[in-house]
Every structure is written in structure tokens, then in C-alpha cells.
Length: 139
Image 1 (cartoon, rainbow, N blue to C red):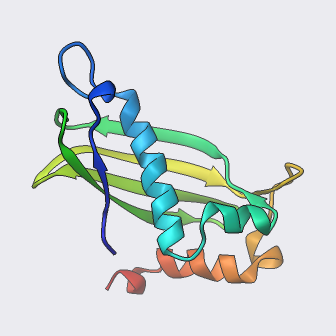
Image 2: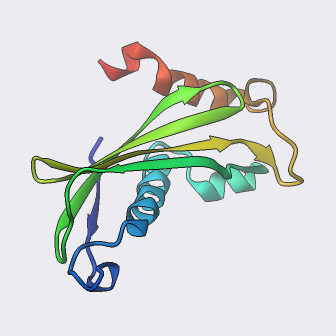
Image 3: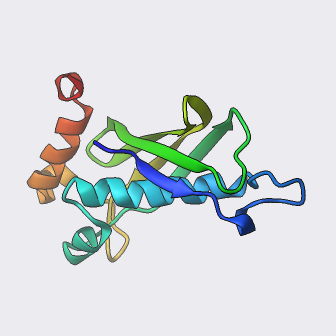
């Protein structure tokens, strides 16, 4: 799958001309939305099915600076799925240089806030996550 590409905007930089650290979290969200859309499960589809997936955890390790107007490629992949929660990994690169790596964790809940057991209520979505986290799917 093609990586998501984010062009660094001038307003994302600080007084030193370096991208402010908070922007990497926003880029992970952009990449996640793009990834799920390309995989056939865009957020609007999830919401139309009565599912929301709030972020319950996030981390980011900064490896190198990003500057205006760098083009950052972001590869998103599901690395863990429990049937209720999933974890997405993000690797952000500028050319051959890794600028940041991170994860977001999400649970899946109904619109009224109840935790969903995806296998029982949404078998097609369950199979999607299982396929993405099965080692053979990476071959």
C-alpha cells in the first residue's frame, strides 16, 4: 500500500523552523483516516454502522527534525487486535530518514458508548482486523 504523504506546512513549525512535536500526532490521525479509507473501512462507514473508535492511547518517538516544506511519508499498519481494541503503528520518513515512530490504540464502541465485541456484532470488520494482524498478510 502506498504511504500517506504529508507536506509540512509553514504554520506547523516553531520559532526555530522545526516542526512542533504536537503535529506528528495530528499526522498520525491523517494517516489513520487515509489508511482505513483505502482499506474499505472509512470513518464515515464505521459511524454509519454505529461504531466509533476513540483513541485510548498514543505515543510518539522523535528521531529527526522535519522542516518546512518537507514531504513526510507515513506508513500505517495494524499491529495488534484483541477483538475489542486495536493498535496502529506509524513510521514517518523523510526520504530514507525515519523522523518519527508512533502508535495509537483504539477501542471500538457503539454510539451510546458501550464497548463492542466486534466478532459477535460485526463479523466482517472482525475479519478485516484479523487479516491485517495475521503474519501471512504481511508476505
